[in-house]
Amino acid sequence: MLTLISDDWAAVWLTLKLASTTTAILMVIGTPIAWWLARTRSGFKGLVGAVVALPLVLPPTVLGFYLLIALGPHGPVGQITQALGLGVLPFTFPGLVVASVFYSLPFVVQPLQQAFEAIGARPLEVAATLRASPWDAFFSVALPLARPGFITAAILGFAHTVGEFGVVLMIGGNIPGQTRVVSVQIYDHVEALEYAQAHLLAGGMLLFSFLALFALYTLNARPPKA
Amino acid sequence: MTASASTPSTIIARFQVVWPGFTLDVDLQLPGRGVTALFGPSGSGKTSILRCVAGLERATSGYLAVNGQVWQDDARRAFTPTHRRPIGYVFQEASLFSHLSVRRNLEFGLKRTPVAEHQVGLEQTIALLGIGHLLDRRPERLSGGERQRVAIARALAASPRLLLMDEPLAALDLERKGEILPYLERLHGELDIPVLYVSHSPDEVARLADHVVYLEAGRARAVGPLNEILTRPDLPLVHLDEAAAVLDARVAGHDEVYHLTEVSIPGGRLAVSHSALPVGAWTRVRIHARDVSLALQPPERSSIQNMLPARVLDVRGDRDPAQALVRLDLGEGAILLARVTRRSVAHLGIAPGVEVYAQVKSVALMD
Image (cartoon, rainbow over all chains, first blue to last red; front, side, top):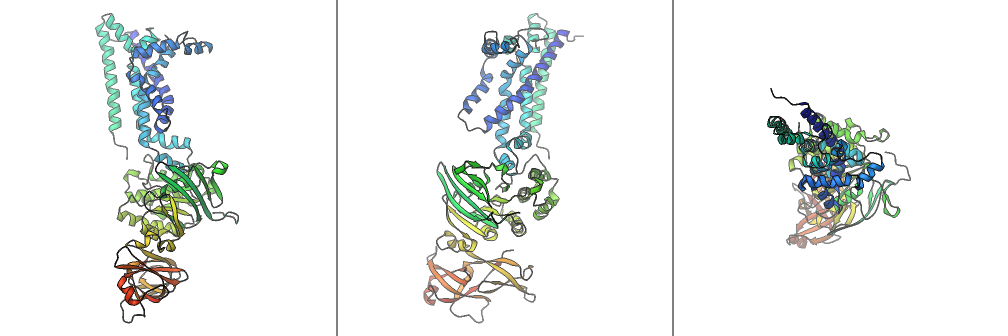
């Protein structure tokens, strides 16, 4: 019977670890960006919105290429990480995380921004008139009301990170157990004409992606609980 | 409420704001007790004033002091943010938190109010608004009228020292309005919290307000006690179909045989339909201009029993060229409006200073 080999399992484990870490980081940094985008009247809104959305249209190789240069030993970020004693990030797991955060940013920020915009200013004004400070109102009113947006953002961010390939290849290379994620492992199997192994992983990815989206649409289609 | 002699019971509000297409420029001194209506056509700046008082909007230049506490003073760059102002705000739409039950909605402001400032108990508020049976429901399971009652209770539960109400009945149909008005009237009677009440409905104003600010195009055109504003000849109110005078009245006695209640008002007594109010209780009567006719002598054998001696203040044309609007002085500063035909004015010789008898066809007790 055909089973996953240990390299496959390592790739699966690495992919899940990468996606979870990336999603966690994205929820933390994506929330304030989305909040700002949803509520600001600043002229920079368009600029920031466009930068956040860039990964939606850029070929992953282009994003990966610039990240490789920026994070590399001679790049601006690379200089800083070396000065801090962190070494250089490309071809390491942390490097992959950094790249994935950029790559999946719009998939987290945009649903959150839409959720915050849908709430509108009124509930926060009500909270203020009931003596809730802006922070208090954010946590006690905005976050609970935006819950569907958070679920969407987390699922999309996670699923999109699981599916990345181009950026990983550019910045992570193909180091087993460190940067070789499932999508790269499938590519390797296909290159080596191991179609059966490729099928297993590819089928797994297909199933996972479908289940993630299925869960998403089911959760969001459910009427608010009474 | 603690108000020492040095904290005058007034609301001083000066706001100047220029928005595209609209300028608000008011300098108001309002009583720090009772219900003050901000009244005027839509776009006159009523809601803007309320939002400035709440701190939800910041006037470019403003000064606001409520019963001695300064909440905004741009001369000193002082501005208290909304969440530090002890206010209650009832919006036009109930705006309940949809993720919280009715009970948790009510507790939202209460929990954030320091115990030392608690004045209104949750139980009292729940009873006052009659929402005890709704506490475990979610907001989306409430009717429009119930939602608005919960919103009012939620604002009260935070023990506000100033209650701001922005057309709380405007989003409701007539039946729901009728459902809530009695609660608002009870509020007025039972709680000693000053209220700023935004409305464009003369009926609501007549029922609830003690004091009226009449606004037009971002400016206060008139400020004064309710009946003075209702009967001021230079304001459009007197020409409305429902133009009316609202007078303070005191229950003088009950006539059990004919199911009537006698109330005394300045200049005389009126019989109204039987009321449950005890003798001595204060209430209000509303007398529509169209329900008042005039006679030079006390008419005998008339079915109209409510008759008040009065002196004509002035006579002016009305919207309908066949009609005239007569303002009558009942004494003690009380003014009554009468709408009569211009032919009657000519035939009876009605002119300023003439003594007449006002026959009141219909009186509504406002409780």
